Amino acid sequence: MIRFAAATAADVPDIKSLLAENDLPTAGVDDHWKAFVVAREGRALAGCGGAEVYDGAALIRSIAVAAPRRGSGIGDQIVHRLLDDLKKRGVAELYLLTTTAEEYFGKRGFEKVDRGHVPPQLLRSREFQDACPASAACMRLIVNG
Image (tube, rainbow, N blue to C red; front, side, top):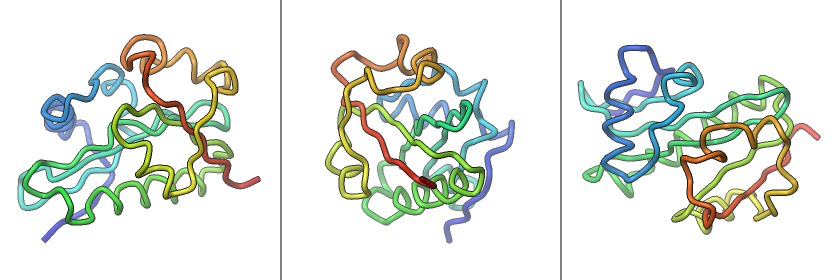
């Protein structure tokens, strides 16, 4: 049985390990783990995802599912929970960078945008500064507005 919960400090090492296994950046996780959701099957981390929230805008990041659990809907549930939480917090614009999931997020309402449309506070994040390649697609979803 999969259990979903807000991440705790004790989850950070497992989150970083899962991200590394999925070739995703771990930079910034230590600073933003409080806005992460984890999915556990027993003691094993089955998936994770997080956000970096900055003044009305958020960067969705680190969506990862353990290899044996891919295709089971865990990623969808994590994204759904993150988006719901951010909407409840009044976040109006959601952004993300991806090299592999443009189609996935496009089906969920995100649209590809030029990085020039990204709020300056997000451009200062580790993801935009150096954690993600310049070739990553930048996508946006407008909510609450």
